[in-house]
Length: 68
Image (cartoon, rainbow, N blue to C red):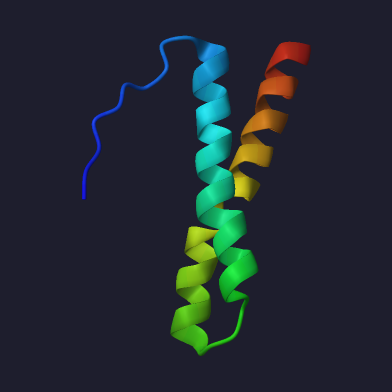
């Protein structure tokens, strides 16, 4: 399935869109699926849920960059 949509042109709107993607992919799947399963399934879920951690690390890096 594919959709035709334009990515937002303004920075503010593109950041909001990225936050919605992170929330939809990582946090809602975490809520619905939990952490049950074997080692391979847990590994795959960790890979899918690294988005929020990546966003936090990137935010901290930008703050350090601005302060330096």
